[in-house]
Amino acid sequence: MFNFIGNRRKAYLLSAVMVIASILSLAIFGLNLGIDFTGGTVLHLNLGEDFSMEEVEAVMAPFEELSGASVQIVQARDITGELAEEGVVIKAPYIEESRRDTLMDAFRAKWPNLDRGDLRIESVGAVIGSELGRQAFISLVVAVFLMVIYITFRFEFKFAVATIAALLHNIVVVVGIFSILQMEINVPFVAAILTVFGYSVNDTIVIFDRIRENIVRRRKSDYAVVVNESINQNLMRSVNTSLTTLFVLVALLFGFHYYIGSLDLIVFVVALILGVFIGTYSSIFIASPLWLNLHDLKLKGSRKAA
Picture (cartoon, rainbow, N blue to C red):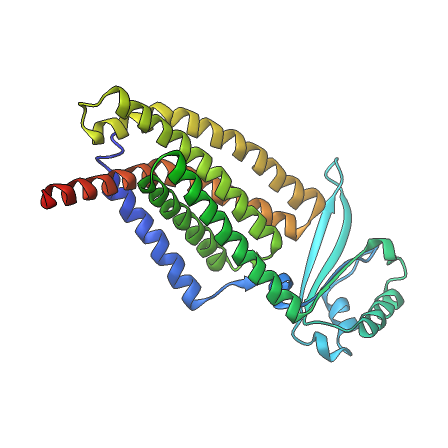
């Protein structure tokens, strides 16, 4: 039986390092926000034939609004592994519809096989991007608020505090990793964070429920012993659940990257994989030991008052 409670300070230290590194990265490098939040235009084009980056840049050169645009080549393969599509993704500031049409005419003149069915054009204005950011923040706040109410009603407020602290730890670390890697933050990323919320809470609640049951059954036992045994009793369940989830997510990541080449879906799956890893870690090493610390603080306060 592993002594999770005895090693909680090591876990706290590891979490502190990850959180501080994440905060420093956010302060220094910031986030690579996608057009969902900053506004702009994304063009995902399947040119239908071989091309080079120099040819794409030459077509874009006459358009001043594309001077700071990022260009990325993406590939998709069929079920045999053969290259099926090779396209280009252009991310630029917001482009008016008339200018987009002119740009597309220039691409069609260079690559006649480019068809409207092979296009994905998304444009988001700065006002809409700001509104999406505000709504994403509200969604996270509402999710946290409802979780506090539910956990307080189901257990007690200390359990809610420990759970929310672990969730905030998860969010900061995942966002920090995205900041370090400068991966794009978009709406699917927010959806992934909300999914990780639910996944982490479910794992934490199961352990808390076992702690509550064991406390009732073993009233004379030391709380540290009860919490440690409760974590160990649920350890294999937590690990097996996380592993089966990760197997599916890794398969999706491979499929999206190798066969589809969708950047948005790749971001979504990467965020989920990181969330499952960190959520499992926090539910085992952070949430329950933190609840024990809160319980001990309350007990010491009661003794001083007495």
